[in-house]
Image 1: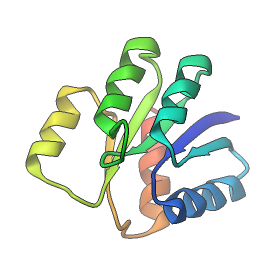
Image 2 (image 1 turned 45 degrees about the horizontal axis):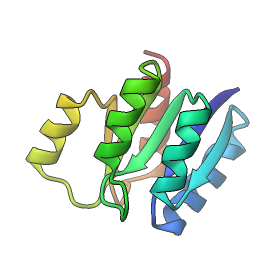
Image 3 (image 1 turned 180 degrees about the horizontal axis):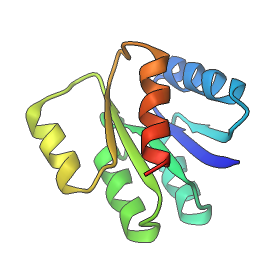
Length: 121
């Protein structure tokens, strides 16, 4: 089973994604609403994929992405944001994000497709 971490300070996002992805039976899911705790967990545990919000208190998604790419370069990272801009997309590409999702999601199928594409690269 693939290990996925979901980081978002909006509990409804982590809950919906965890329920949806768990039903597929393909993933072990860990969720965090506190980016600092997630940062510490990433330092101890290898994940196949991390989905992280960009705008969060304490550490933002760009900080998380940069940390992951330093300590676990094979971990795939999808950035999520409700505040999309060309600057954020360009910055995520510069930091080597593997994917980008805008919130609210158009559908959970969009999320599933993005995850499958990235995990099967």
